Image (tube, rainbow, N blue to C red):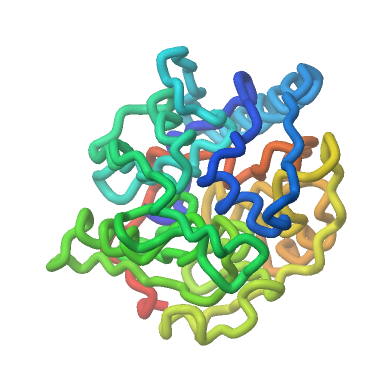
Length: 330
Protein backbone atom coordinates (compact mmCIF):
# COMPACT_ATOMS: atom_id res chain seq x y z
CA UNK A 1 0.00 0.00 0.00
CA UNK A 2 1.06 3.59 -0.50
CA UNK A 3 -0.36 7.08 -0.10
CA UNK A 4 -0.70 7.93 -3.80
CA UNK A 5 -1.91 4.97 -5.91
CA UNK A 6 -5.31 5.18 -7.59
CA UNK A 7 -8.02 4.68 -4.96
CA UNK A 8 -10.34 1.72 -5.54
CA UNK A 9 -12.07 1.36 -2.16
CA UNK A 10 -12.22 3.88 0.69
CA UNK A 11 -13.88 4.51 4.05
CA UNK A 12 -15.19 8.05 4.60
CA UNK A 13 -15.93 8.99 8.21
CA UNK A 14 -19.08 10.31 9.86
CA UNK A 15 -19.66 13.00 12.48
CA UNK A 16 -22.75 11.23 13.85
CA UNK A 17 -22.24 10.30 17.50
CA UNK A 18 -19.13 12.46 17.94
CA UNK A 19 -18.39 13.43 21.52
CA UNK A 20 -15.56 15.44 23.09
CA UNK A 21 -12.63 13.80 24.83
CA UNK A 22 -12.92 12.81 28.47
CA UNK A 23 -10.74 14.46 31.10
CA UNK A 24 -9.02 11.27 32.25
CA UNK A 25 -5.24 11.15 32.69
CA UNK A 26 -4.67 9.79 29.18
CA UNK A 27 -6.51 12.65 27.49
CA UNK A 28 -4.94 15.19 29.86
CA UNK A 29 -1.45 14.07 28.83
CA UNK A 30 -2.08 13.41 25.13
CA UNK A 31 -4.39 16.29 24.20
CA UNK A 32 -4.04 18.98 26.84
CA UNK A 33 -0.41 18.83 27.99
CA UNK A 34 0.05 22.46 27.00
CA UNK A 35 -2.33 23.59 29.79
CA UNK A 36 -1.24 24.38 33.36
CA UNK A 37 -1.67 21.42 35.70
CA UNK A 38 -4.37 23.23 37.69
CA UNK A 39 -6.33 24.54 34.69
CA UNK A 40 -9.75 23.01 34.27
CA UNK A 41 -10.61 21.77 30.80
CA UNK A 42 -13.97 22.99 29.57
CA UNK A 43 -16.71 20.39 29.24
CA UNK A 44 -19.20 20.63 26.37
CA UNK A 45 -21.14 18.69 23.77
CA UNK A 46 -21.16 19.36 20.03
CA UNK A 47 -24.36 21.09 18.91
CA UNK A 48 -26.44 19.28 16.32
CA UNK A 49 -25.70 22.05 13.81
CA UNK A 50 -21.98 21.16 13.92
CA UNK A 51 -22.75 17.46 13.43
CA UNK A 52 -25.12 18.18 10.54
CA UNK A 53 -22.74 20.54 8.74
CA UNK A 54 -19.81 18.17 9.19
CA UNK A 55 -21.88 15.31 7.78
CA UNK A 56 -22.89 17.42 4.78
CA UNK A 57 -19.21 18.05 4.06
CA UNK A 58 -18.32 14.39 4.50
CA UNK A 59 -21.09 13.44 2.08
CA UNK A 60 -19.53 15.82 -0.44
CA UNK A 61 -16.17 14.15 0.21
CA UNK A 62 -17.72 10.72 -0.35
CA UNK A 63 -19.23 11.92 -3.62
CA UNK A 64 -15.81 13.06 -4.87
CA UNK A 65 -14.57 9.49 -4.44
CA UNK A 66 -17.67 8.02 -6.09
CA UNK A 67 -17.29 10.31 -9.08
CA UNK A 68 -13.68 9.20 -9.31
CA UNK A 69 -14.90 5.60 -9.55
CA UNK A 70 -14.01 4.37 -6.05
CA UNK A 71 -16.23 2.22 -3.85
CA UNK A 72 -17.14 4.16 -0.69
CA UNK A 73 -17.89 2.63 2.71
CA UNK A 74 -19.34 4.60 5.63
CA UNK A 75 -19.02 3.60 9.31
CA UNK A 76 -21.98 1.83 10.90
CA UNK A 77 -22.34 2.71 14.55
CA UNK A 78 -22.84 0.07 17.19
CA UNK A 79 -24.00 1.22 20.65
CA UNK A 80 -22.11 -1.70 22.19
CA UNK A 81 -18.83 -0.03 21.25
CA UNK A 82 -18.57 1.97 24.46
CA UNK A 83 -15.00 3.25 24.01
CA UNK A 84 -15.68 5.44 20.99
CA UNK A 85 -14.73 9.12 20.76
CA UNK A 86 -16.09 9.32 17.19
CA UNK A 87 -15.94 7.83 13.70
CA UNK A 88 -14.99 11.10 12.04
CA UNK A 89 -11.36 10.10 11.44
CA UNK A 90 -11.16 6.42 10.43
CA UNK A 91 -7.46 6.80 9.58
CA UNK A 92 -6.66 7.45 13.24
CA UNK A 93 -7.43 3.90 14.35
CA UNK A 94 -6.85 1.63 11.32
CA UNK A 95 -4.07 1.20 8.79
CA UNK A 96 -3.83 -1.04 5.73
CA UNK A 97 -0.44 -2.42 4.72
CA UNK A 98 -0.31 -4.88 1.82
CA UNK A 99 -2.63 -7.77 2.82
CA UNK A 100 -3.05 -6.64 6.44
CA UNK A 101 -5.72 -4.42 8.00
CA UNK A 102 -4.44 -3.41 11.44
CA UNK A 103 -6.42 -1.88 14.31
CA UNK A 104 -3.84 0.18 16.21
CA UNK A 105 -3.63 -0.04 20.03
CA UNK A 106 -4.23 3.74 20.15
CA UNK A 107 -2.86 6.09 22.79
CA UNK A 108 -6.26 6.83 24.38
CA UNK A 109 -8.47 4.17 25.98
CA UNK A 110 -11.63 5.91 24.78
CA UNK A 111 -10.67 5.35 21.13
CA UNK A 112 -9.97 1.61 21.22
CA UNK A 113 -13.38 0.55 19.87
CA UNK A 114 -13.62 2.94 16.93
CA UNK A 115 -12.32 0.42 14.40
CA UNK A 116 -15.30 -1.87 15.11
CA UNK A 117 -17.63 0.56 13.32
CA UNK A 118 -15.44 0.65 10.22
CA UNK A 119 -14.37 -2.79 8.99
CA UNK A 120 -12.99 -6.17 10.05
CA UNK A 121 -9.27 -6.38 10.70
CA UNK A 122 -6.55 -9.00 10.49
CA UNK A 123 -4.73 -7.65 13.57
CA UNK A 124 -6.59 -6.28 16.60
CA UNK A 125 -4.04 -4.67 18.91
CA UNK A 126 -6.54 -2.76 21.07
CA UNK A 127 -7.17 -5.22 23.91
CA UNK A 128 -4.58 -3.76 26.32
CA UNK A 129 -6.06 -1.02 28.55
CA UNK A 130 -3.63 1.71 29.63
CA UNK A 131 -3.45 3.14 33.15
CA UNK A 132 -1.77 5.98 35.01
CA UNK A 133 1.63 4.27 34.92
CA UNK A 134 1.61 4.31 31.12
CA UNK A 135 1.63 8.12 30.87
CA UNK A 136 4.28 10.72 31.64
CA UNK A 137 2.33 13.26 33.69
CA UNK A 138 5.41 15.51 33.81
CA UNK A 139 4.76 16.24 30.14
CA UNK A 140 2.12 18.77 31.19
CA UNK A 141 3.54 22.17 30.21
CA UNK A 142 6.77 20.49 29.09
CA UNK A 143 6.64 20.06 25.30
CA UNK A 144 10.02 18.31 25.26
CA UNK A 145 8.62 15.27 27.07
CA UNK A 146 6.57 12.68 25.21
CA UNK A 147 3.27 11.84 26.89
CA UNK A 148 3.59 8.05 26.84
CA UNK A 149 5.95 5.66 28.57
CA UNK A 150 7.64 2.93 26.58
CA UNK A 151 6.51 -0.07 28.64
CA UNK A 152 4.09 -1.30 25.98
CA UNK A 153 3.12 -0.37 22.40
CA UNK A 154 1.00 2.80 22.29
CA UNK A 155 0.34 4.23 18.85
CA UNK A 156 -2.38 5.61 16.60
CA UNK A 157 -2.60 4.48 12.99
CA UNK A 158 -2.38 8.13 11.90
CA UNK A 159 1.20 8.16 13.16
CA UNK A 160 2.27 6.39 9.98
CA UNK A 161 2.52 6.99 6.23
CA UNK A 162 2.98 4.15 3.73
CA UNK A 163 5.17 3.91 0.64
CA UNK A 164 5.40 0.36 -0.68
CA UNK A 165 7.86 -1.49 1.56
CA UNK A 166 8.57 1.70 3.52
CA UNK A 167 6.61 2.93 6.55
CA UNK A 168 7.21 6.36 8.09
CA UNK A 169 6.45 6.30 11.83
CA UNK A 170 6.29 9.53 13.83
CA UNK A 171 7.58 9.29 17.40
CA UNK A 172 5.18 11.58 19.26
CA UNK A 173 2.58 11.76 22.03
CA UNK A 174 0.47 9.31 20.00
CA UNK A 175 3.22 6.90 19.04
CA UNK A 176 5.97 5.50 21.26
CA UNK A 177 9.06 3.56 20.22
CA UNK A 178 7.58 0.27 21.43
CA UNK A 179 4.80 0.86 18.90
CA UNK A 180 7.28 1.12 16.03
CA UNK A 181 8.87 -2.15 17.18
CA UNK A 182 5.44 -3.81 17.35
CA UNK A 183 4.55 -2.68 13.83
CA UNK A 184 7.87 -3.95 12.47
CA UNK A 185 7.22 -7.31 14.17
CA UNK A 186 3.76 -7.57 12.57
CA UNK A 187 5.18 -6.78 9.13
CA UNK A 188 8.03 -9.24 9.72
CA UNK A 189 11.53 -8.86 11.07
CA UNK A 190 13.03 -10.73 8.13
CA UNK A 191 10.90 -9.21 5.39
CA UNK A 192 11.87 -6.22 3.27
CA UNK A 193 9.32 -3.99 5.04
CA UNK A 194 11.10 -1.22 6.89
CA UNK A 195 9.60 0.99 9.60
CA UNK A 196 11.48 4.31 9.56
CA UNK A 197 11.13 6.19 12.88
CA UNK A 198 11.05 9.99 12.66
CA UNK A 199 12.36 11.48 15.92
CA UNK A 200 12.41 14.98 17.42
CA UNK A 201 9.93 16.41 14.91
CA UNK A 202 7.23 17.53 17.33
CA UNK A 203 5.49 15.92 20.28
CA UNK A 204 1.83 16.46 19.50
CA UNK A 205 -0.20 13.92 17.61
CA UNK A 206 -0.17 12.63 14.04
CA UNK A 207 2.13 12.73 11.04
CA UNK A 208 -0.36 13.87 8.37
CA UNK A 209 -0.23 17.55 9.30
CA UNK A 210 3.55 17.45 8.85
CA UNK A 211 4.20 15.33 5.73
CA UNK A 212 2.09 14.31 2.74
CA UNK A 213 3.60 11.69 0.39
CA UNK A 214 2.22 12.84 -2.97
CA UNK A 215 3.91 10.52 -5.49
CA UNK A 216 7.27 8.77 -5.89
CA UNK A 217 9.96 11.36 -5.29
CA UNK A 218 7.64 14.19 -4.25
CA UNK A 219 6.26 15.19 -0.84
CA UNK A 220 4.59 18.19 0.77
CA UNK A 221 6.30 19.12 4.03
CA UNK A 222 5.38 21.47 6.84
CA UNK A 223 8.63 23.28 7.67
CA UNK A 224 7.13 24.69 10.85
CA UNK A 225 7.58 21.15 12.17
CA UNK A 226 9.99 19.31 9.88
CA UNK A 227 12.81 21.82 10.00
CA UNK A 228 15.62 19.68 8.59
CA UNK A 229 15.43 17.17 5.73
CA UNK A 230 17.97 15.05 7.60
CA UNK A 231 15.10 14.05 9.90
CA UNK A 232 13.78 12.02 6.94
CA UNK A 233 15.08 8.60 5.86
CA UNK A 234 18.28 9.14 3.86
CA UNK A 235 16.84 8.19 0.43
CA UNK A 236 13.99 10.68 0.95
CA UNK A 237 16.38 13.56 1.52
CA UNK A 238 16.91 13.79 -2.26
CA UNK A 239 13.18 13.99 -3.01
CA UNK A 240 11.46 17.08 -4.35
CA UNK A 241 10.25 18.40 -0.99
CA UNK A 242 7.54 21.00 -1.55
CA UNK A 243 7.44 23.46 1.35
CA UNK A 244 3.86 24.14 2.34
CA UNK A 245 2.86 27.82 2.44
CA UNK A 246 1.63 29.32 5.68
CA UNK A 247 -1.91 28.17 6.48
CA UNK A 248 -4.94 30.32 5.82
CA UNK A 249 -6.69 30.66 9.23
CA UNK A 250 -9.63 28.28 9.54
CA UNK A 251 -12.61 28.90 11.84
CA UNK A 252 -13.87 26.51 14.49
CA UNK A 253 -16.89 26.11 16.72
CA UNK A 254 -16.61 26.78 20.45
CA UNK A 255 -13.99 28.38 22.66
CA UNK A 256 -10.98 26.56 21.21
CA UNK A 257 -10.07 24.41 18.20
CA UNK A 258 -9.62 20.66 18.24
CA UNK A 259 -6.43 20.92 16.18
CA UNK A 260 -3.87 23.46 14.99
CA UNK A 261 -3.86 25.49 11.78
CA UNK A 262 -1.27 23.08 10.37
CA UNK A 263 -4.06 20.80 9.25
CA UNK A 264 -3.78 22.78 5.98
CA UNK A 265 -1.23 20.11 4.97
CA UNK A 266 -3.81 17.36 5.51
CA UNK A 267 -4.44 16.54 1.84
CA UNK A 268 -5.20 13.11 0.37
CA UNK A 269 -4.44 11.59 -3.04
CA UNK A 270 -6.98 10.10 -5.44
CA UNK A 271 -4.06 9.04 -7.64
CA UNK A 272 -0.51 10.20 -8.37
CA UNK A 273 -1.72 13.37 -10.04
CA UNK A 274 -4.93 14.26 -8.19
CA UNK A 275 -5.26 15.63 -4.66
CA UNK A 276 -8.16 16.56 -2.40
CA UNK A 277 -7.34 19.73 -0.45
CA UNK A 278 -9.27 21.96 1.96
CA UNK A 279 -10.83 24.60 -0.32
CA UNK A 280 -9.88 27.58 1.85
CA UNK A 281 -6.13 26.84 1.56
CA UNK A 282 -5.63 28.79 -1.68
CA UNK A 283 -1.84 29.29 -1.34
CA UNK A 284 -1.33 25.55 -0.80
CA UNK A 285 -3.63 24.72 -3.72
CA UNK A 286 -1.80 27.11 -6.05
CA UNK A 287 1.58 25.72 -5.06
CA UNK A 288 0.46 22.13 -5.65
CA UNK A 289 -0.99 23.10 -9.02
CA UNK A 290 2.31 24.78 -9.90
CA UNK A 291 3.96 21.40 -9.28
CA UNK A 292 1.62 19.74 -11.78
CA UNK A 293 -1.12 18.36 -9.52
CA UNK A 294 -4.82 18.55 -10.21
CA UNK A 295 -6.52 19.74 -7.03
CA UNK A 296 -10.09 18.88 -6.08
CA UNK A 297 -11.18 21.35 -3.38
CA UNK A 298 -13.40 20.26 -0.51
CA UNK A 299 -14.83 22.70 2.03
CA UNK A 300 -14.79 21.04 5.44
CA UNK A 301 -16.30 23.61 7.76
CA UNK A 302 -15.46 21.79 10.97
CA UNK A 303 -12.01 20.51 10.10
CA UNK A 304 -10.55 22.25 13.16
CA UNK A 305 -13.58 21.71 15.37
CA UNK A 306 -13.53 17.92 15.01
CA UNK A 307 -9.79 17.52 14.36
CA UNK A 308 -9.69 16.09 10.89
CA UNK A 309 -9.03 17.11 7.29
CA UNK A 310 -9.44 15.09 4.06
CA UNK A 311 -6.61 12.67 4.92
CA UNK A 312 -7.81 12.07 8.50
CA UNK A 313 -11.42 11.54 7.46
CA UNK A 314 -10.66 8.84 4.90
CA UNK A 315 -9.07 5.40 4.94
CA UNK A 316 -8.14 3.55 1.76
CA UNK A 317 -8.87 -0.15 1.89
CA UNK A 318 -7.66 -0.67 -1.67
CA UNK A 319 -5.30 1.32 -3.88
CA UNK A 320 -3.35 0.43 -6.98
CA UNK A 321 0.23 0.08 -5.80
CA UNK A 322 3.58 -1.54 -6.41
CA UNK A 323 4.49 -3.53 -3.32
CA UNK A 324 8.17 -3.89 -4.08
CA UNK A 325 8.76 -0.16 -4.18
CA UNK A 326 11.53 1.41 -2.12
CA UNK A 327 12.54 4.99 -1.37
CA UNK A 328 15.80 4.54 -3.23
CA UNK A 329 13.97 3.70 -6.47
CA UNK A 330 13.53 7.43 -7.05
